[in-house]
Image (tube, rainbow, N blue to C red):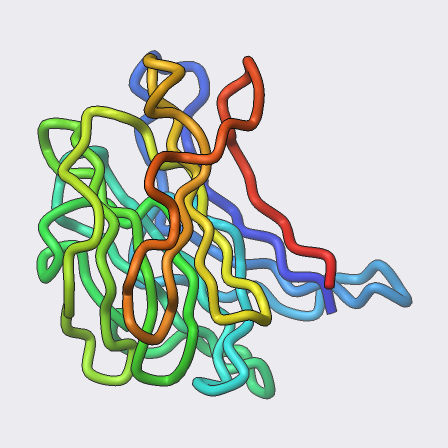
Length: 199
């Protein structure tokens, strides 16, 4: 099955207002037919869709209106495809838009939170309780566009700063939250935007 997030934004308006709640279309990859369309709790699903084996859920972050605490990480049951009746963790709980996230286990996840002043913070959270745990980075004026976890229990965080010396990749241990990078790993002149591990 192919899961496609539908944001339902009015692209004719400069602020891209939402015209309906977010949805996820489920498409049969063999027949190219839409199997079902799942209505989400929030609007503007903006993160990538991720499957968490430990939670047995497909996760996506609905950010809603920018700088408004109206969204959170949504969960979809892969067997029956309904969205859960509450957020895994809400923007109200963490104090900002959850623009990117990754889960390490049933009780440990990492999320980038953008507050009302557009400052970015990296936090850990407990997906099973919906509570924040620790702040690891920030708040920074630098953009944190993406993060990913590898099989070595490391989370790589992209830092896209206007200053080359502070732009690059930062690496944390997913168990201890210890950072192994003393300065961000330089990835060249272009700012890092997306991380993908091929292992």
